[in-house]
Amino acid sequence: MGSIGGPELIIGLIIVALLFGSRLPKLARNLGQATNEFKKGQASANKDDAPKSDTPPSSN
Image (cartoon, rainbow, N blue to C red):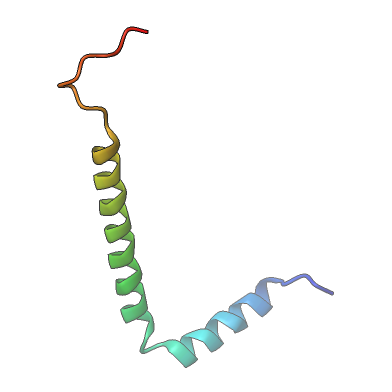
């Protein structure tokens, strides 16, 4: 009890595909777009956080 085997997993995937089959491509596309936007946001945040080369380092 508590363990999911191969046959149960396959049956579950078939049920999910039947219930959400027409929506899966749209969901996958939206997930891909969200991932790309997240990566762009991370890249711009990292670029903004980079130290400016115009200011000389302080010598304390």
